[in-house]
Image 1 (cartoon, rainbow, N blue to C red):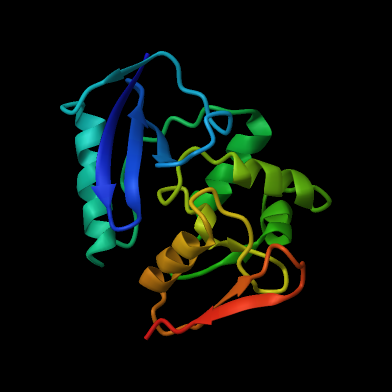
Image 2: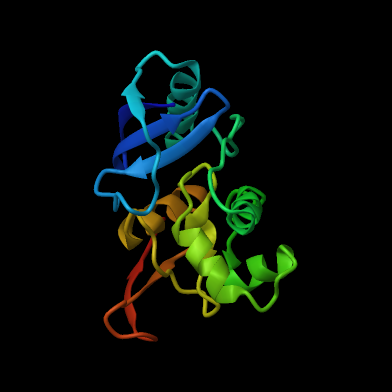
Length: 180
């Protein structure tokens, strides 16, 4: 059984999902329902894991929190769980490429599989898939959208300009956001 609670954040409404074991999902307002599946679900605004997650996310968005201390309940394949654990290990304010993650988990040739697992990460922000960028340093796909990815990275490293990739034309820069 899964429990959920919707919350309003600076990046829009998020749906927090927990099991009795831990936080299982942080889903975006317009998330693809096929990307993650947590069934059955019951709304529970008083679930202790959901309340604590909301508190820690609030601290994160105000700049008072740099890491999360929550029990996590990853639901996926063993390979996906390896990738998601690698995401959790990326330090606040730093980024990694898909190939770096592949090497870190001992599968240096599985760059595309790492990208696919990253795209199915059910715990956005807490398992910071927004910290994974293209090998060329540009921002690439993100379930919450590239503008939110840029916002989260700017929140963590406000002194760095962020370059958005133009997804309609690979290799072409779409915009630079100054984050100072």
